[in-house]
Image 1 (cartoon, helix red, strand yellow):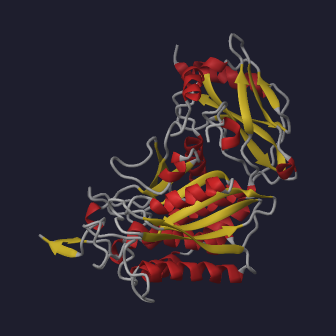
Image 2: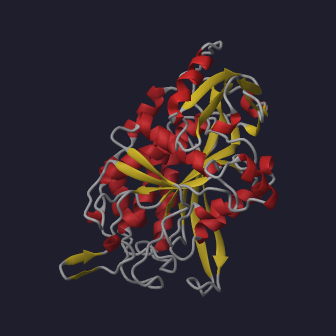
Length: 461
């Protein structure tokens, strides 16, 4: 019998159950945010960043016009200008540490991030982060003096974070939103390591990290020109999963339902529902082969994080000295950036962060039972006092085990347990999402430590 033959029976059974009305998300708000993202402003910011000549981590720090010092001070002042326009709604600060004795940073060097925090009105200790990289490089990773425009890698991602701050700072959100310019990426992901360690020390409850690294190129080295797709890279099991958690996962599943994977599914859903002419490829991998990005330091500490980027890369424009050889122009110059495409991916980030921050926190301590039973029961911890004023109820999701996205769902109201009758636990993957009174949903949480979003639930951090 075909595997889909049972689905109509399942849906008919559930249709007979009492229906609950789920609040509708404020689509008008998301559309307003999407339309407010400006390709022209993103272009201006990329041109400004390119104008610093080089932004290499080991480059000039005293000049007002050249080097990473001038670039990061400009980013800081830009965040301050945005904050002034929203009556001081952003907390802007430098975050740094000294690095030395590393292969790519042999001498003592201060690696400096620029952080802007938009505090949530209901649960300010819950964060979603959008990051872009300040630094750039040429062919020799240690060359800190040659011109290194870094227009796409990664002025595009940093300009996206700045533009998202301009747009979202006009609105208020329940959870906190962080816009981050990170340094030291090309030298070893040091800016991300510094920020992830600070977040862990500060007890941040991070719902998601959206690392934007190259969001402006539409012409691939393979000859493909495509402005209608984007990639989201998302790792599987947590890096710091314990041996006991791995043993549990072996028997209950969760290999494809880490919080990073369900964050990636959330990004995919935002694109599908709200971003015209954009399809998201969900890549079940931490990053591209042999390469890395600034979501990884957060993943290393167990936080959910994904990399959002263009689909078709042009390696002639990455990590290259500026030159022309055999008729081929090499180098990461401004002419290689498509600003409308960068705006489209920026809007994907902005809408994802808006929805995540309007939604309640993901459900905590989700569990499941139903072995040797025709029914499946899910349980979770009731919302704490920070979230009660925001919460409308919960929504249960399930899908066939070989399907990439959640295909079936049922809103079950403000309860802390629910039984799906005649849905066999062995045949599907399940999860639970929180729903706000204005209809915004959290990411789906897979039962058990493999799917939990916050470290105090799983004990893995």
